[in-house]
Image 1 (cartoon, helix red, strand yellow):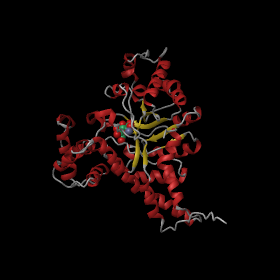
Image 2: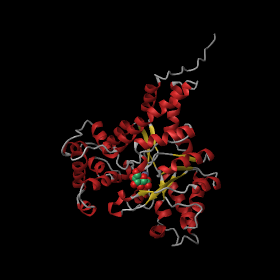
Image 3: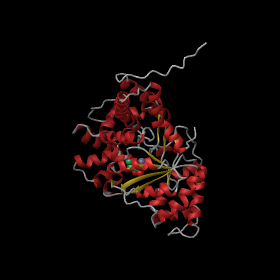
Image 4: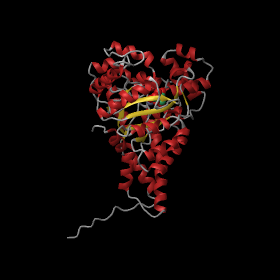
Amino acid sequence: MVTSTALPTSLSPAELPAVVEEELGATPFIDIHTHLFMPSLGNLGLWGIDELLTYHYLEAELFRSNEITPAEYWQLSKRAQADLIWRTLFVENAPVSESTRGVVAVLHAFGLPTDASDLGKAREFFQAQSPEAHIRNVFKLAGISEVVMTNDPLDPLEAPLWKKGAAPDRQFQPVLRLDRILNRWAEHWQALVAEGYSVNADATGKSVDEIRRFLADWCGRMAPVYMACSLPDTFQFPESSIRGRLIAEAVLPACREFGVPLSLMIGVRYQVNPAIRLAGDAVGRADLRALEHLAVTYPDNRFLVSLLSRENQHELCVYSRKFRNLMPFGCWWFLNNPSIVEEITRERLEMLGASFIPQHSDARVLEQVIYKWRNTRRTLAPILTRAYQTLTEDGRGVSRAEVRRDVHRLFRTNFEQFAGARH
Ligand code: FIX
Ligand code: ZN
């Protein structure tokens, strides 16, 4: 009996748009960077309409469309802040910006009015939700199987919860975030001393070994899928600074020891306008020779890399072609707008094939994953379709199985394999 190993049929250019959309819709994504927290970390996790509206992206937009000063705004209760933002950006103005449209999409996803003059109905709905069930429902609506958190071992609210043994959650992967240690040592070294680690102000003597011990303790406690740090646009490496030394002598060796990548999010101009708090950060173009040096000097380390500046994206693609221990991910923060996501993703596809991670949500409020992933699927579908149609025109068709494989790779396996994530 002859069994036919018929090749999967190639799709016609006309069939491709629907198949790409279906495969993007059917694949649960891994959201590799968020500021969401698992239920056992209690009230650290933000959700609901008041949190959605007082998101720092919307606060930045409020101050452009309302006379209130930041000082007056911070005097208001969270509820009053949300009411003001709703009135200013959704009632007195059409919510056409990416961030305002996002809130509309969330309300719409729950069948709530999107053009009400007040938040009565929305508040009623969210108050009626039980957190755990709501999380699972939101993840389903967003088409994600799990999120990766941002966990700060020196955060006075979060750290004690981990020490008390916060229950792990398979839909929330932990990350060891090191900004306080690497970027603000002067402010935080004493917190380490208070925890029993003998470090000092200029990180000399036993400090490096003690930081290694600190990282090992937290890897034991948290089993992070990676370590991470955001870095300024002025970041240099090598750099004769406490940060440079701790990265080289403590963080990178610890990453090798525990087999996890280091995530570098580079290009922030911190607090250019401190009056608007989280909304007060800006962007600057970084000198990527720091990345070149890291990739060359530490071939046994893996680096997840996200850059804030639009002008740095092409260089990152080029460096990623040179060094497979670099994994570009996401269109971070000010880049997370469809016009820019399209530009960056097309360039990455043309230069890297499917060997990159297109997006992360950076969600700070639970329900944001609904619109951030809906936008990503909406932006990616025509880009992938066009790529397959061009390939077909050039003489090679693709099958549904191949589309599915690429989508899985872009939104799941690239991360799983690069991070050596447990599953
Ligand atoms: O450093 C980061 O992880 C940034 O994503 C945040 O600090 C930033 O405030 C943010 O929310 C971006 O979307
Ligand atoms: Zn973030």
